[in-house]
Image 1 (cartoon, rainbow, N blue to C red):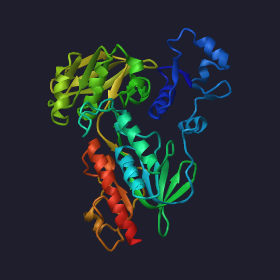
Image 2 (image 1 turned 90 degrees about the vertical axis):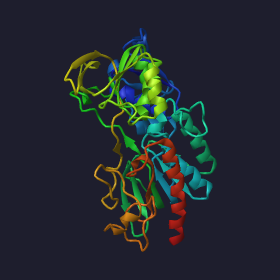
Image 3 (image 1 turned 120 degrees about the vertical axis):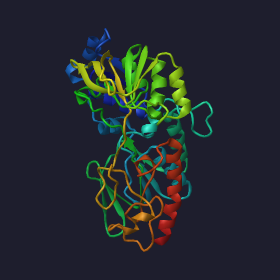
Image 4 (image 1 turned 135 degrees about the horizontal axis):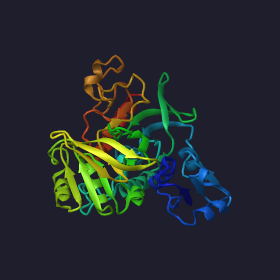
Amino acid sequence: LRVIGSRYSPDTFRVRDFLAKNRVLFTWTDVETDPNVDLLLKGFGVSEADTPVVACSSMLLLRNPSNRELADRIGIRRPVEQTLYDLIVVGAGPAGLAAAVYGASEGLRTLVLDSTAPGGQAGSSMRIENYLGFPTGITGSELADRAILQANKFGARLSVSTPVSSLMFDKTYPVLRLDGDETVTTKCLLIATGVEYRRLNAERCEQFEGRGVYYAATHNEVQICKGAQVVLVGGGNSAGQAAVFLSQHASHVLLVIRGDDLYKHMSSYLAKRIEQTPNIELLRNSTVQRMNGDGHLNSIEIVNSKTGEKRTVETPAVFSFIGAVPRTDWLPQEIERDGKGFIRTGPSLAQSPHWTGKRQPFLLETSRAGVFAAGDVRSDSVKRVASAVGEGAMAIQFVHEYLKEM
């Protein structure tokens, strides 16, 4: 499989990112740097204007395919069987995969749906060092791969590049509408869609997404900025793990945090490692104010909130690991959320106008009986991989309790 496209093209980045997250091996030819790219394009009968192109074989050439088309054409998307499932899990991050393993192993007909790829946000982490049982650490993708093997072993079905567009309720069961107006019905639903990082509040940020602004730090992004000075924004564990990883490939890493205490939101071991890494520079009390470039990012402006001092930094890449926006915009009003959009769960929802059960909601149950939430998407959850795995496993006990009532 070969991808041909520019490092400065958001669609080229999207295609490469999708393939990498789905563990599809491919070769990338960068039209900006490869001296033989004109001959290569001519051989495929396309021009640079057609890129990104994906050459699957001499007979199959895809021009700027959508993720769905790409998944269908290379055979990684499994069709959704039209049957009544015991449990559908939306989201294949740590919480969703844990639920799939425990649900399927206990005999539940289980389907897992994910809009992009298994692993979730944690799947992009290049080193998780405080997860129980892995003293030397484990990558997020390897952890996800092992969970997928377990889930498949027990009979769970996984369908990637299958976005869920809406949730409805018939008289008895939750009904999910999928991309393309297909529907699927389940007795129980677990929402484990996780969160995504918030866009930087910097001038021209949106303009450079996929061409200098990134929301993960993996080998995919490193190919674009290897040996350069890069900027990373964020003070949590994900930001810390990314900074350590990038320091192994970039000449210099500027870590920008809004506050003055690196230890406030980051695990101690990680903060200490950052302080001990010579090519990581910490900028406290700072924010990115503006991004500059012509077609792609080449510099940013950073301001110190305490002194007002401004600094211009030349860089081809900014990595954003700030905030957490829950992926809940597809849910109906019946599923109550807090002021930030995270899903509310637990006994306090017994007073909700949407709750119709004769008992109090279970700990991970939403305002609609039989619909559960786990992991980062849940209000007041602990935003850690181990916590998400625990909640995903715990949810299965509540699923069994609910099914007994039916």
